[in-house]
Image (cartoon, rainbow, N blue to C red; front, side):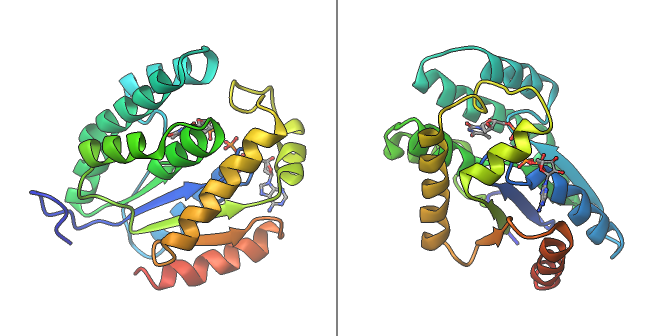
Length: 209
Ligand SMILES: Nc1ncnc2c1ncn2[C@@H]1O[C@H](COP(=O)(O)OP(=O)(O)OP(=O)(O)O)[C@@H](O)[C@H]1O
Ligand SMILES: Cc1cn([C@H]2C[C@H](O)[C@@H](COP(=O)(O)O)O2)c(=O)[nH]c1=O
């Protein structure tokens, strides 16, 4: 597929959902599933994925900042990530699995925090005007389920300490985007058991091979 000036022959899959929905759990499964079919896979994450991006991640997850600063730093991390990791991997023909990408900015900075969607659309048009994921897996759970899973596992970062209403708005924005772009965004009911989810993921991935 041609996306921009360079021939990007690999496939780009992103994993989305509110915190605790189960994204990270399933990235390992997808990586092994693809590797078992002979694909070279790069697993990465946002914010982060590069040395600079990981420094920005530490700021974003732990420092209080203006909403627009937060959105700009998310896209600064993404710009570096695209240049250093995502685009070179796709150009090599690798499959890239990213734990979050631009849908997360729309869900969290616009849905959750209320930033004007048009500002994010402008950043998206600047940072990756022609590249979109081939597939986005949206792990969807009610907030109560996500919260229970998170509380059981670790200490919470700045986003994870937000109120219930924030996550309801993030979830609604994710679902709104999925309804708008059903060809790219597949909603995965993440309240089910891990094996049941993985069976669905296998069917979805088959179609992308
Ligand atoms: N379908 C499931 N059923 C039961 N437990 C699950 C399921 N999926 C994930 N979990 C558990 O929930 C916890 C959170 O999962 P995970 O870390 O994958 O979520 P996440 O969406 O990546 O969260 P974050 O965005 O905060 O990183 C983990 O302990 C994981 O084992
Ligand atoms: C890419 C991106 C992420 N976020 C938020 C969403 C999460 O709360 C954290 C990342 O933590 P995770 O445990 O690795 O999921 O960052 C955001 O608000 N906007 C974004 O663009």
